[in-house]
Image (cartoon, rainbow, N blue to C red):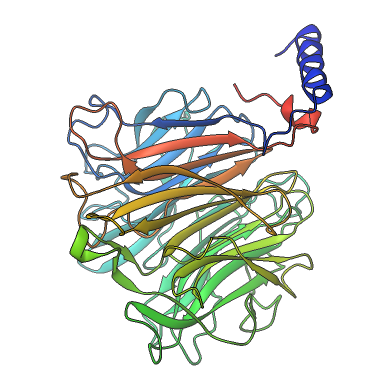
Length: 465
């Protein structure tokens, strides 16, 4: 707890800074940290497809899951945790084998509820196929988590309603892709008892085309949004791309129905098709390793204060490159305005988007530069202080995966990475080149950045460390 004197001193320092009229673009230091060490990761695992969550009850507590270690009958799979804003990290083996004979984890995503309890959605596999589970905290924070009822199929994600203003606080939602249909269908499982029981509801329109890349976000009023794409064939599309629409739909009743924006939802880019990635060769195979980009082209977020909805998606446009576009809706998804977030000079994919309480929009994405002798993959973090009209872009890391023995061509970091916001700070994780390791390799790289204008005194005074 900061004393009144300390807070006053900080306020005076901010006021003095303002009086000097020194402008800064989104004041706040960018902090990065390789969360793995030789001791925590002795097997030099790839740590791909990372997901991140911040405890809204105590923002110093951050959790990450990656493809790190599998569970077995005697030991759980790990959750990476920090209790000091990401400065130091440890592993807790909390994700237990859900049933005998099931292997995993596969796809995974995590979140916290309003009182700081952790939840993890996990994909398990066995001879009978794929099943999903939501794990919940029933004991101490770092103890074994309890799996709920099985549900679903491939590609589970997770969002937990932690808003005090929501009539559905505590409900959780897990999108997944139903491969049992003749055309795959975006589906969402909901629960009002911490995942102990899950109720799956068809949410995407697969009447003409299969669905994919289903992601979810929750508004402060309890409305739940999903984005998904309809895969509409490759006719006329460049190699490695397919035609698609990116749809957003909404549930107003806790996930029981998904018709808030009509049966199919609303295309965020209008009636025309766009061309997006569906490939295992993101990059230039003649100049190095390449990545998979198939469910790597859409993300959704909601402003936690006013409920504005933001959708990020990939579109191959007249620049000749795949670009990241951001669409914004100020009327709960009914209408959208769209702008390009990237600069039209390199192929880009893997967008994740988040919004702070003051409406700053953050965008994590990857592009590649193959102008030299090897392909360089670059993780970017861009921020917009004007609702997506313009972007301030920073390169978090530029990496050649060629020398990295645990970077597997055709996959690399997987389908997605992690970005979230808590109050006025962005928190993210990506799979990048290690730092401080005996063996150079892929590791989970954490970052955070407060995002304030220099004249936002209340934002700058917000505790971060």
